[in-house]
Length: 239
Ligand SMILES: [Zn+2]
Image 1 (cartoon, helix red, strand yellow):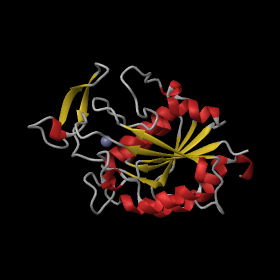
Image 2 (cartoon, protein in one colour):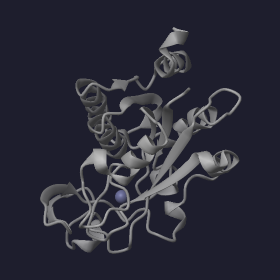
Image 3 (cartoon, helix red, strand yellow):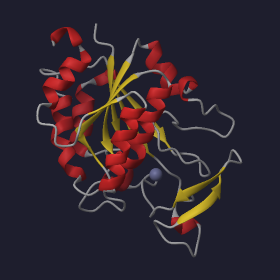
């Protein structure tokens, strides 16, 4: 039995060119790859998780809430758990109720065809908690931040999932942090290069290196035989 889940990270209009407020360069080029991955005649995922960045207007990560700071400034913030950390400030993005937070239309259609195999994982819903990783979910200040005890981990385990394949946006932030969580929660983890794009090319390259260093698998963005490589990774007996 296939015990591999597909995690689709933040494929939302605000992260997509041409009009996203925090558009990831070339982000739209992952759409055909994800469309292919959701073709039931080619792939059989027991479970698909789509994460959705889903912020209130007054979210801690928005530069607009830390005037006079500007988007992409670094600032030390204190979150709802009392943790202080250096954070990149962002333009307003993925605000609840806006078009920008919606998952891309054709992807939604693909997901609807897969019915109850699909789980939506919203994140960053608390005004004073940032959540890059899909495993941090709609966290509350009192909730655990240990990836292996997160609601998403427990859900995946309850469905018998042992391996995860990660695609989506952006490589150097939410894809990376989702992969780090998945690895620390002991899932066999693959980041599928052709299905991801990052904000900074250098940081994206480093992100793939970090996934490999932690024991995960990361295919390069221009990997030509990614379908073959992915099939062998999901089921080594086909090698
Ligand atoms: Zn966000």
